[in-house]
Image (cartoon, rainbow, N blue to C red):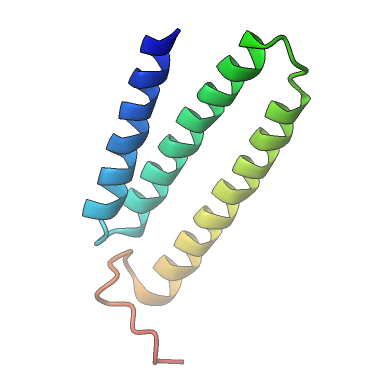
Length: 96
């Protein structure tokens, strides 16, 4: 059981590393965030299943993660429509 947790913590840290290192593109940041959410869901599912708890909280977690993904994709689409790409260098915050 501990090997699974160590493997998932390693995968979570790899996702956090990719999130920190690939900050030029918004799409890469969103993909690494979704990867981290999926690893967190797997850890939560195994933890709740190990203690024979209800799995209702995992469904609530999935609903919030889907809402987070939809919000990120809508921001990505609006950024591509206004600026033409998803580079953060071309996105000037001070410009209205």
